[in-house]
Each structure stands twice: as structure tokens, then as C-alpha cells.
Length: 121
Image (cartoon, rainbow, N blue to C red):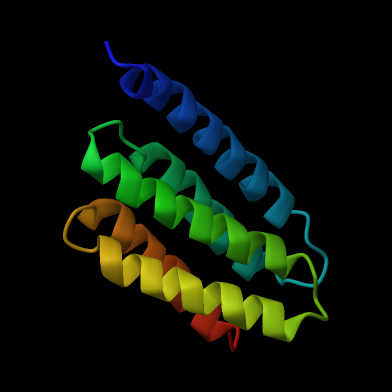
């Protein structure tokens, strides 16, 4: 087994744990209403389930999850509209690149983007 393929399950597990932590933290964010908190947290949970260790799809899904993570972190800074917008733009670009190779994860990310759009982001 190659060193990279041995690291993949560990990388997936770490990213899944990070997404679950973000889900928990978004549920505690004071400046978001409860519906938005619930929607974003549920999508983070769903994305963590869709992480897969199938070669190239893993790479695309990982990029999506990292972009979602960046947006979620920026949501914790209510006065950083530029940071949130920049992270959201990177997320949209990552989704467009991953659409063909990781369609299930991308559909979750597009729903995440829709929630952000409903927030005015």
C-alpha cells in the first residue's frame, strides 16, 4: 500500500471530525437565527457523511469540505463581510470545479451556498 493511500482514511476521518466540530459550533453562533444555524449545521453533517476515499473524488470532496470550512469559520466573525464574501466566492469556484467528479458532495455544497444566499452572502 502506498504511503498516500494509507493516509487517505486518516485524512478523511480528520476532515469529518472538523466538519462535525464546525456543525456544533455553528449551532452556537449567536448572530445567526436558529433556522439558519440548523440548516448550515445539518449541511455540514451531511457533507461529512459524503466524504469518500475513492481516489480523485476524495481530492475534489476534500477541497469542497475545506472551502465550506473556510466559509463557516468566517461566519463566526460577524463584522468581516469581506472575509465572508471572499470565502463564499472560493466555495462557489470549488463547487464548479468538483461538480462532475463529486456530484453528491457538490449538491450538498450548492445547498449550503443557497443558505448563504438567503443570508445575503
